[in-house]
Length: 475
Image (cartoon, rainbow, N blue to C red; front, side, top):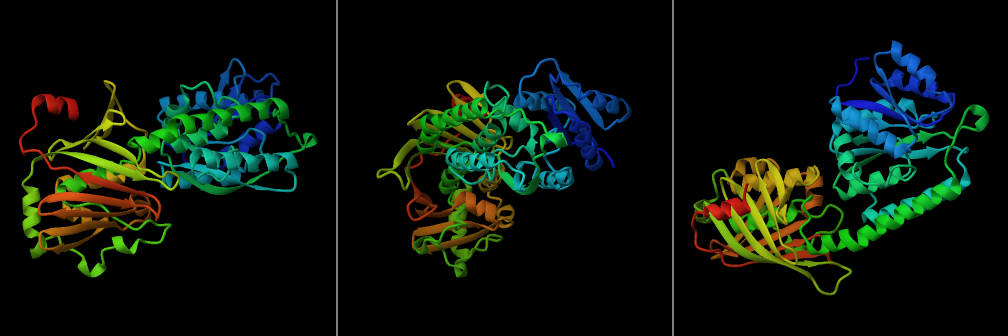
C-alpha cells in the first residue's frame, strides 16, 4: 500500500486501554500514514504503539505532555499534518468503536470532493446505551437549528474526514470545542463557513468493559458542557449570524455579486430552484434559447453596446424578502466594474463594506482591513461565471449555462440556466428586465415566499476610474 501524500488517519488517544494497539494495526491495514496523538495518557497503553512506530514507517506518534481534551489533540495533530503537507485527516476513536474497514471509502469520498467534510452517519447495534441514543436525537435537532439546514446527519459521530486548513481556521483560535464538544462544534462552524457535508453510513460498536472498552464520558459534567456549547452556538446564530444573513452580503456564497454585475452588463445567471416548483411567470421557454456564437441577429446590437463599456458604475437598491418577515431587508450601495480588474461591490447600508471579485478570488474590505472568506465551492463557481460574463466569454458560459432571452421592442428579458444541479440550488430562479442598454429590475426567486428584488439606478458617465477609486475599490 503506497502512503497517501494528502490524506492521513488521525487517532486521538487518552488512556484508551489495550484496544489502542489493535485499532492502530487495523487502521494501518487500510490506510497509510496514520498519526496517533497521545493526549497526556497515563495508563501506558501507548507504549506498544510507540514501539510499533519505531518499526513501521507509516505510523507516527505525537505525545502531548498534558491531557487537554479530544478537540485539542485533534487540532495539535492537524497542525503537524499541515506542516508536513497533508490537506485532509480522517479522525477516528482510539478504542475501536469506529470501523477501520470504512476508511478507504471515506477517503475516496474526500478525494472526490476535497472541499467537503465527510461525516459518518452511525449505524448502531443493540449495544448502544439507550440514553446516548436519545441524546443524539436532541443534539441532531439542535444542530439542524443552528445551521438552518439538515446538512449534518449526525453531529456526534467522530468518524469523519476534515479539510485540515478549513477546520484550523474556524476552530483553531477559539477556546471552545476542545473536549467532548469538539465534534459538534466543528461540524456547525464548518457549515457556517460554507464547507459542504457528505454523509456516509458507518457502523459503530460500543465495547463492554470486559471487552476492553473504555469511556471517559461523564454524563453530568459532559452533558453540561454540551448544553453550554449549544447555548453559545444558538446565541451566536441569533445575535450575529442570522442578522448578518438578513442584513448583509454573505461573502461565502458570492451570489449577489454575480446578480448585480451580470445585470449591469445585460446578462444574468438564472435557474429553477432544485427543491421547489418553478414560478411559471419567471421561466423563459426553451424555444427562445439564444445562439451566442455568433450572437442572434435580434440581440447583436445590444451585445455590441454592452461590450463597448470598459467601466461601469451605478447605484443599486436590494430588497430581500423572507417568509418570516413582513417587510423586506433593504441594502443599498454602488457597484463598479472594470473589465480588466474585475468587480467591486461597495455596500453603504446597513453596514459599509466592499466586496471585490477578480482572477485571484474574493476579497472582503471592511473597517480598513482585508480578508478572504473560507473556501466555498459554490462561491468559486459563481465567481468564475461572473468573470466570464465580465469578459463576455459566452463560449465558456455556454458550457455551464443555457442562455435564454426575449425582446419586445426596446424592452428585453435575459437569463442563464445552470446545467448542474448544485449551481441551480445556489443561484435559484433569476429574471432580468431591461430597456435598451439599461437594466431596470432583477428578481431572484428561491420560493414562493423568498425572493430578492434588485433595482438598478442609472449608470454614471462612462470614464476610467481615478487612481483613488482603483486603490479604494479594487486591488
